[in-house]
Amino acid sequence: MTGRVIIITGANSGIGFEAAKKLCEAGNDVILACRDEVKGKAAVENILKENPNALATYLQLDLADMASIRKFVEDFHALGKKLNVLVNNAGLFLKGDDRVRQFTKDNFELTMGTNHLGPFLLTHLLLEDLKKTGKETGDSRILMVSSSLHDVNERMNRGSSVLDLDNFFLDKEGTYSGQQAYKNSKVAMVMSTYSLAQQLEGTGVSVTCMNPGFIPTTDLSRHASSVARFMLRYLMAPMFKLAKITRTVDHGSKMIVDLSISEKYQGVSGKYFDDFEEKESSEESRDEDLQKRLYELSARYCCLDGYEALTAPAPPPPEEKPVKS
Image 1 (cartoon, rainbow, N blue to C red):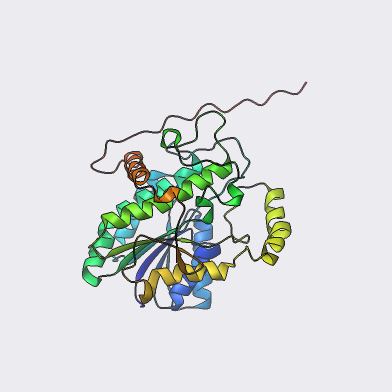
Image 2: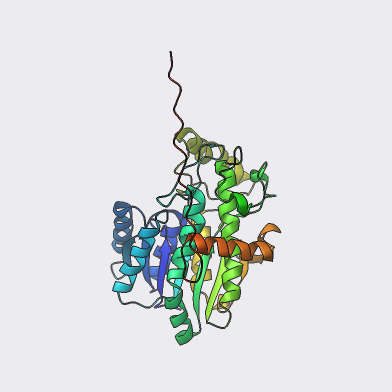
């Protein structure tokens, strides 16, 4: 189906950009929601260069800033457009063995704030738009782009633990690592998929989640060290490719396109997809009690109506580096 209005976060590079380009080629009106204005506008220009008739628009969005998310929604509403599909694609992965936490403008641990709480707030601020379209057409969609690393038993998660809501921002001593933070944020996305799908039954809005696979050529690891990025892209990636572990940007972007607009997935909700097939997500992610408690905690941190607002504690002062004698 063409002619849909689709928001894709993190659409200036990687699978987000390729998906935006493909969706424009199919005749859809695509909003590229990106943090970096220069890169976002350049992405739109690149799409228009190949397809002058494309309906592609850039809007600024920083998922690590609640005020920016609310401003984005205001800017979108000012366009006067309906909304058919929201693709929560943007994300970050800090250096896996990093032991020093970073924070969003709202004092959330950076990875959880960007990968889960930001999309959580964005989705809820746009729910009425999606419900309206769902009522009119019977088909509006929310797509969460998660990762196989949401599973604590995934081999790259060796040493990681299950999500502890009493240590949501990993502030307990010795519990933080970039790997643990990423894993927690991605399992939170999967659990939010199930919670939302249940809440939105009968509204015409479906919610699905996908694992695009390990794609070493994306910008996901932009916060890692230059040495780590070099090793990932030029040393580890070729080995993983031979072992058939990696996926391509084209593969991941096609999954986004299919789940966003294919009639095959109309009405499909509360499902997790991997390699274009419905799969069972991790045991942890299917814990219904944990899903409910995570949803309430997230709603409180995002100050949603009907929930008692919860403020994240201020970050500790940065550690002073020892002076060399």
